[in-house]
Image (cartoon, rainbow, N blue to C red):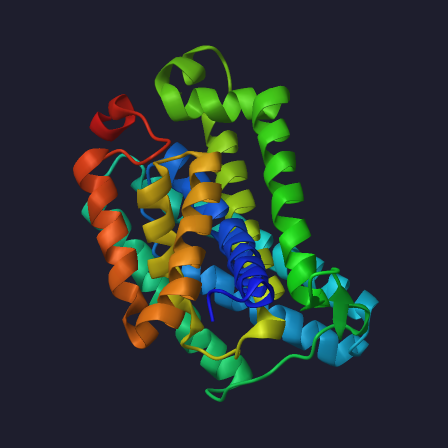
Length: 298
């Protein structure tokens, strides 16, 4: 089967599309992890909420392309508002505390969100149809390919470039990078570091919800969907490097490629390849492929 160029092309495209969806989610985690130094186990729960908000929005508006995009925007906005209150009134009190308290707090958020989802939407699985504009397949000359997966393949790089430009070329980007490197000096220079931290946590959470909304049409939406994605996100961050945007991009592609091709070669043992890759990276570069040793020691 690997000698068939059409088959290989489809698998490469599947790897890229899956990787781009994972990147959108992991980018939010690495941003929060890199700036706030908080191990946010609730990131998967935020992803789950995004999927459910999309489902509710499309049920209200209708399964239209407009309804889908409104649902994606609504998922990001709803999660952004919730994240603001979480960060401002709860998480902000734990920045100077030991990491164990932060871990326990974010894990408590996972339990709260999971129960809230079950109370609001129930414990059953739900399916969401592809938006009408992305149903069917597109002729790519070599082969036909699902339009929605092609859409994900385009959204990921566009978002990556947009995030890079925002972080490197704007004032807010410089403030975020300064907060990551030396928050005390930034505060001494008169910048409201609390506001920067709030903005980072809100934006990172919005990316998680957006990623969940974009993933919803291709997966089953249920209260347990947060469990696997948070593991994938941490693997991506570990492989790519703490706080590195392009590290998350490459890490997501590595994880998705190992998942797709590992499934074809080793069937259900593909997860072993992922952990072997993560172990190899930790042994060679404990700070990740695109990370820095000084950040590891921070």
